[in-house]
Image (cartoon, one colour):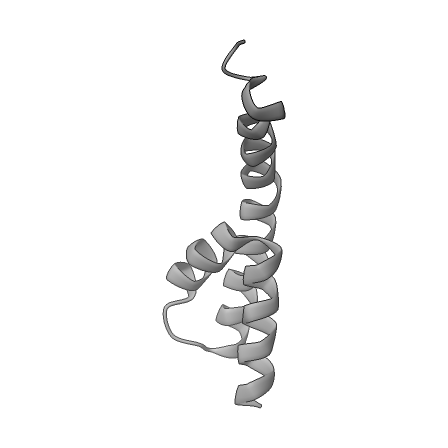
Length: 67
């Protein structure tokens, strides 16, 4: 059993998830936070980007609650 195929390719799936969703969601959260003038835009982008789709939903809920 190789490292890439262990646990039905879990390492590959997690790696692809982070490569695709982290930068995409992180950039959206960062740019939207900058546009709205929220504090710690870079930190928000990195932290919520790491969570991916869940981070995007958290960001949208926080923005909607502030408005």
